[in-house]
Length: 183
Image (cartoon, rainbow, N blue to C red):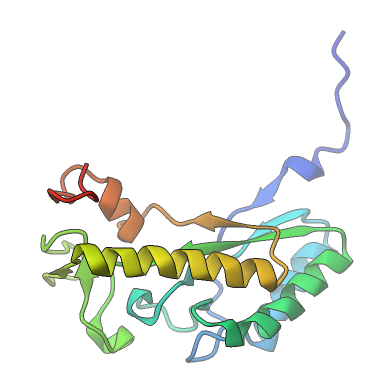
């Protein structure tokens, strides 16, 4: 007979769910802190944050999206991780770049993508990232992971779905690149 653990809470994760609780600059608000504190205090042992942008040009169109695009945000997120850890829970930050799934009105930057193929949802044609710009975004993900670690997160999750930038790079229809970032 196989022994079965009765407490499986250590193996259950709260999936990334958009909060909309950051200020206009992507700093987590007290409402954001209270949400994660409530999850941890109610026994959720593994919590993945909502998608958090790694650079301003990677913001999504959703108001209140959190960002981890600068070291100035570390102490604000540290309050969140400290609160979660008080309850013995772990938290992971989901890192994202919207790619062509955004608007210049939101980001203040040109919309970029793996190719210049029109977004069916936004009906805009993104500027195709150069190799150098792609490298900059890769570095933004690395920097954001470093900031998340220093803010006390237990790990990061890369958002590679919903047509966002990483998804664009792994999608054979969208990625028609002939450089080192092609498939």
